[in-house]
Length: 298
Image 1 (cartoon, helix red, strand yellow):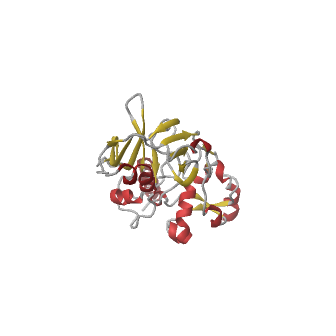
Image 2 (cartoon, rainbow, N blue to C red; image 1 turned 135 degrees about the horizontal axis):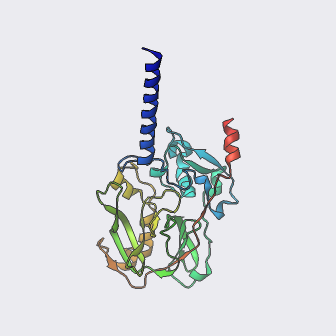
Image 3 (cartoon, rainbow, N blue to C red; image 1 turned 120 degrees about the vertical axis):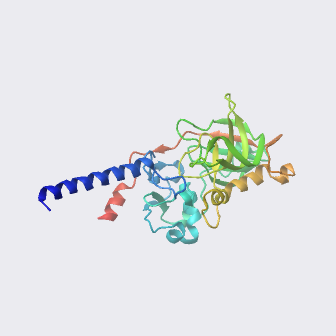
């Protein structure tokens, strides 16, 4: 084979490789595949860049996720603590990401960015607070925080409305009338849904089960962990553990409060008030721990 032919073949192979790589990047993950990097993600798959004010006093390090890494292998029985700290579910913890890991797990064992007592909730039997800046939601009884959990609120351009609202409907088996799953095979599931607002355009806003990717991601609703829904829709995780949407639903509008729940849409009277405050969290241009990452790789 002549040198010229070898050169032409080399150029051809290189060109085909570049085209294939470009197609993979532009096409993104398929609807039925495990989640993978999204080139349009403003955080560049680096959750250390998502700045939550409440973590300022917690020492943490960046953790790059390798192909062989899983939450339980990395963190053992403490993996739910790390998942909650990063506001991310297991389905979205994939190779190529960087997350925050506390230096001491005890520092996040009882972590919540919300106040333990909240004066505006003191006269309410049940009161829900959604903090958009922290991507967190809390359940209060007469002003005392009884439990709290991470959330995924509306992303830039489809922000969650702020203000004081009230839960006026429940729908345990709700599905979106506007949005479908990635492969367009079904309407997007919204299990354990509680409606808190209807906009002037007649679009309803709900607190419900959804994917949590570690940052604002919704079209305006407030999403909570629900691995049972994810197993039903995507087949993972094998054993659901994070079931926050059901916990909040049962506490706020469950059968102890409103008797028989058929799973169908039901309007409610005197549902809990919902206070939604804050702005979207800042996404830093670079990780605050970039120098640490670089030093560890040298």
